[in-house]
Image (tube, rainbow, N blue to C red; front, side, top):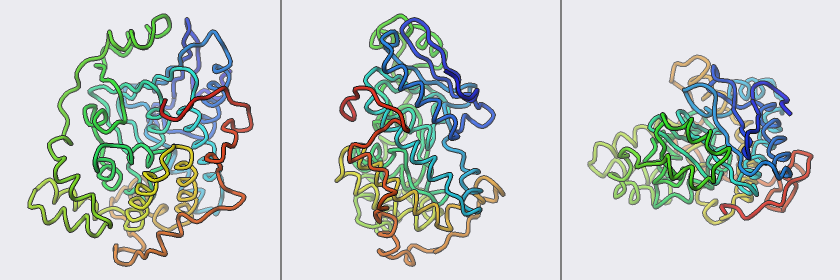
Length: 365
């Protein structure tokens, strides 16, 4: 069944195990990996011998740092479209995971960012450890949260999701639990015990034996100013409120936001607010695909990846450079319908990358 050795597949007992296997690249996703995972899920959904699926990342640094953004930048510079095909299949995979008919256990140990959130946080049982660093860092590279991230963050309590989306900040185990991005804390030294026991044990019982209280987080202490400041109707007003709080943490947060792509910030805020209204995951993924296609042709994505990943000078030259220069028309363009190129998940189109799907279930069930 293994189509590419960047993903390792095996079955043991009544469990199917998926291991993302590019540890030197922090298990960053490429197109072949998406197809391998999707094929495994489609096959195991029809196999009565497989009762639970477990996804982990090779190495000790993290489950997955996201998609291969170097490849995305190269594709954009070359005027290609491979990235659009990648996102189409990635978002379909995210939807498949969310409606999978068998328990899907995601071990979110270490770094879990961007596409790594997409292959984990839509699952049934999401495990974090003391090493977990969970983030949707897209505004820092001139992009917008995707892989269902705007759906997940729009559902976070209060305005915590808005805070994480605009800043791109990583959170640890307790804050991931607070924001609804994870379900259980398991110490890293017990992960092997947990994953091995899932081959024979009931999922609930296996998690109960290994789970415990998470170390204290950061966000709960700042809920008052986070909920107040991020409830504003515009990025500019959010910044005004943050700077006016007289709180060092709020001021530092404002400085972080001001370093992000102005266009990405405004589009991200609009995407989150729209995601709240859309509700279900599939139409949000449709929206994210429109936004991603627009971002692919914008200058900030190429520049953001250059500054953060290629040259690593951490000094992106955003265009436009200021929030005031990003108009409502500029933002609306990101949400324009794609016609025949629409993803169409909200219309009930096939999730199977050309293959059939299993019986499925409601989103979030």
